[in-house]
Picture 1 (cartoon, rainbow, N blue to C red):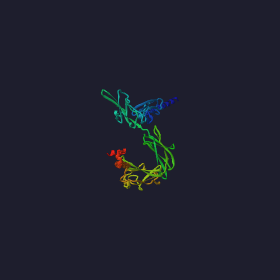
Picture 2: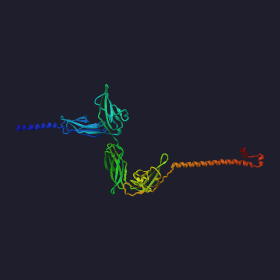
Picture 3: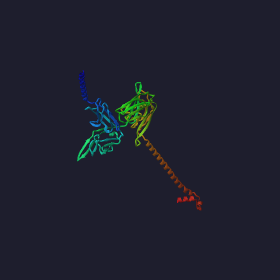
Picture 4: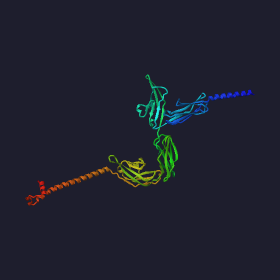
Length: 472
């Protein structure tokens, strides 16, 4: 009986030994987890684990081809190992881990880490060499050497390339060379390229909307956009401070949302919200109320002059008292003007004109008698082609061959006034001179009329003496 039990033990032992050998030959399959994007100067963690590996397990984190970043050991097996990394510009690259246990080695999946640097950040690149002394360094930016002419853009400090406040123009590929001279022999070693990506902060979002007709109902289209920034960003539409839609823009800085709109009704206050990795901004509000076109319509005429005070053009503006989305049309002598210059028939009647400000303004770019006539404008709702028009009164624009400008009229008037003043002054001077001459002739006559007795008596008045002196 005992002999039989001993015989049964050997097969079990052989099987166990075989299983140990088999298990020892099973390849390790480590798994690496970690971020694919990190901010400059932040801290990230990569974790590596090789399931079902016999202890102890040695883990190594490697960058790119075979650059050792860190090493750690799991003494009991089945535990993940964390590698903490402070992110610098040189951290950009491909990472993988290598696990060794029981004489076997396995390599994990790869993770491509991108370093995110925002404009305005201080960026420092280091050219590190394991061995060597009395080294000099040369930096390459997009495969071109960083020379002294570019030191306003960069700053060199030993083995470091410093950018105090990065801009999008700093984005590109960087590499360095370390070299030394020994007995006129130059020895050097070059690094791999590091890609630097500069992200731009997102500007405050803006919001606009328009309305269109869909069957018998109306729909509003709200646009949210930022003028600058680096995608991807997330846009959200808020109506009365409640989120009604959210879109992530990956290739642009704009998003569109549809909302229900009823002309004549206030549908609430809308705002756009934009979120990036570091920012959250809100737009100014816009009222989702569509007021139908109506009320009074009038045309205002303004003459435009050159620097030489010559009449160059005329600008006609159409004003409507109410309406959120007015559509304008112009008429000359009851003939509708075209919306573009492609209408050759109308071109012959009004060859020089331009429409601006969404057709609200009509500019007569060259004035001649053929542009003279009665101008009117009309408006209707832009979102309803079949809607009624409201029209202005006719405004006469009269252009003649001879047209005196305001400055010219003032000049002529001033000259006429000056001539009149000179003529009046000349007349006064002449009158005064004539009066003096007449007075001079009258005085002798009075002297001759004196009686003979007064002359012989020798008793002449002072005035008579004075007149005699003049005559003498």
